[in-house]
Amino acid sequence: MSKDIIIKTEGLGKCYRDPEEKWVVKNVELSIAKGEFVSVVGRSGSGKSTLLKMMGGLLKPEAGRVLIGTDDIYKFSAKAMADYRCNRIGFVFQDYFLEEKYTVYQNVEVVLMIAKVDVKKRKDLVSKALMLVGMEDKKDSYVKNLSGGEKQRVCIARAIVNDPDIIYADEPCGNLDYENGANIMRILRELTEKGKTVVLITHNREDAANTDRIITLQDGKVIADEVKG
Image (tube, rainbow, N blue to C red; front, side):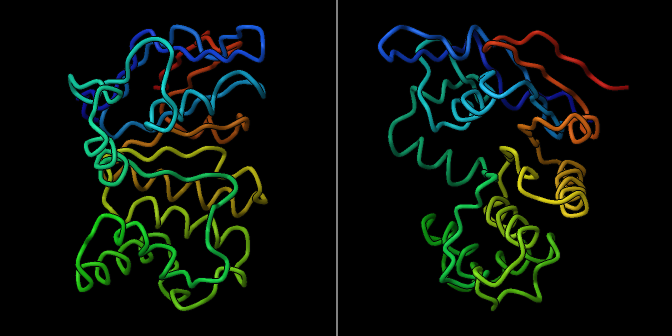
């Protein structure tokens, strides 16, 4: 595996005031390499999803930095941040966030429409993404008619259609049975074998055991960082 660092956090922290001050992520220092399959585990409320949102440019921290190379993403212009989200990263969430009234193809294509990719190229990229997750035969099906496992595969296709460097997956197997969950984990593993970096948020220790590295959060702090092998 390449040891080139693709994303790094320095002293990362997030504080909420409701009304008392509460730090939900505290002084997190991480370096994640290209092609690494990393899981972040911890009890509910430990700060896992908050950390992922900050790393993905969705939630501004109160302290610290998120670095891509030497660039702090929270110092990006609005245009540069939009480019980062559209072209450098992909998100997979437990709750899908798919448009039920649209087809599989349309749900995946929307990412490329936002990125202003031309129509002909969009068709090729969507077909490739759906093939990678085994959903090419369902491209004209409406999302409302899919199973949970199929919907999550569409989510992964949507996350990878723009060929991002990093995929952030927040509890992607949380609503799935064992067989479908195992299939999602297999797809995520295959993505790292193609050079993608995957950061997985999970409460499932069995899923975490199938990653290269397990980071454990407790009360917003990293209490363990175990590299397997």
